[in-house]
Image (cartoon, rainbow, N blue to C red; front, side, top):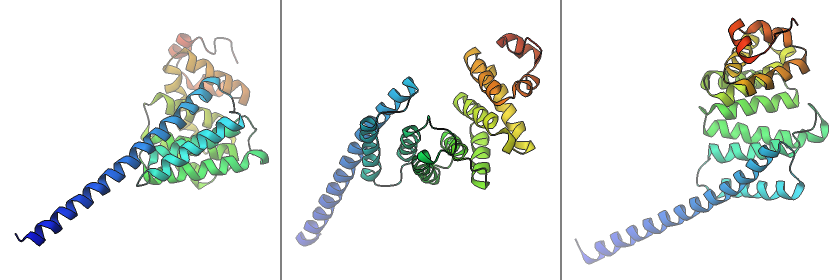
Amino acid sequence: MSAVTQKVSALLVLLLALALLFAGARMALAGIASYQAEAFLAVWEKAANQPDARAWQIAHNAAQRAISLYPVANGDYLDRLGRIHSWQQFRQPYADPSAESSRRAALDAYRAAVDARPTWPYTWARQAHTKLYLQEFDGEFDLALARAFQLGPWRNGINRELAEIGLSAWPHLDQSQRLATLESVRRSVANGPAEAQHLYKIAQHTGLTQVLCDSLEPALRSARKLCLIPQ
């Protein structure tokens, strides 16, 4: 190998190493920003309340920074951005015009997230939940509901969220979607007393206590102390 060839090869190796170092540094910074955004989400979820404007903006900036620094579309980071948008005005009623902008932004982030990571059921469930908040019961809602059910049949968080969505959207569901909802209800109720009471309260609020009670086996109703008084 000539001296020139050796120098060219060494230069190429150096350039490759620098490129890898640069990419690695960006990914590390993206991870730090993502961790910061997730820390805010954990606080909001524990408090179960909307964040104040300053906290929301800091979390949003961190989530956007993580996405922009990562070299390719990252489904986890995009999902996190969607969750941050979802929390911005999550206490507002369904179809509230004042919350439409944040919910549209959340929906866009979830769409990008499922494109990047199509087998993650939590994002599909969150996409369906966002459509519920927007009161848009269309093909996109149907697909998100179905994919979440198919991909996460034994994940407790998925069953809980699908049960919540289904009970809240009941008048807009077809027969197969109602059957899937009741299956998610049964799985969630079987998971523990807290889950059972949570869904029972939603059923009361939506006028579906009889539907919920009829869907549960007597042994499960007894174990969870549900539906003991005739509805």
